[in-house]
Image (cartoon, rainbow, N blue to C red; front, side, top):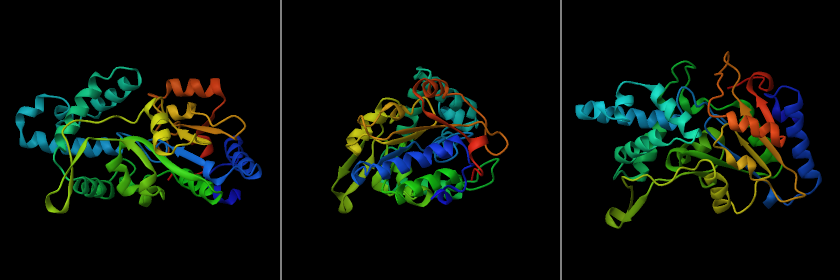
Length: 302
């Protein structure tokens, strides 16, 4: 059934995927154990020049800075107001290097920006942002910048009895409204970062966001949340950065396993960058993970 993977070039990576799925089927691994987990940003869709949710958050922070000039000298409002993507890029790079000073500033701003907002309102606004915002250089709506080979891989896995899950550092209420539309993955199979919410009985029951930030589903939190949300070890895990620790979360001995690490090395069709993936690439070499070269393995990107 390699015709299901038409956007993958023939080569070792495609062969490894086909062989893995064939092995799972031939071994008659119980369907309930056929779990595949995917990071989202940079794995299922484009994350440059900033991850999609970061763009949504920065737009909101810029609105706040426009309305309140005193915020314009304070981060993260300053970066949002000045369209300083370099500041956000440094926050992300520093986070993967173990320095979260900038991340704490950003997270405090996120909590303030959406405090007391109904979760449904947040989902509506974020979905509208993804559908209406055009990428600055790729000139497509953000929601459409999904990687064609990855969508084919999702469908190929599902056709062979796998349940597919998103395990993302983006927020759950950001990812869930478009998970089915963008990736074909239902809302209930999204594991992501959480913001504190609270329930009140008014108006038939309201759930609103609180000003604090909950937890970031990144690094060691990803295996923890996979266990909490799925209750099983994944046979297949796919990521692209140092934060995708679920690649280290192996299935039980004797079960087939495949770990894929997406390497962004295609400046012509997408972006070429390795910042934030240095440790992951080293781990791939040490552990025998399969590195997916966008330049060499993707027959088409979008």
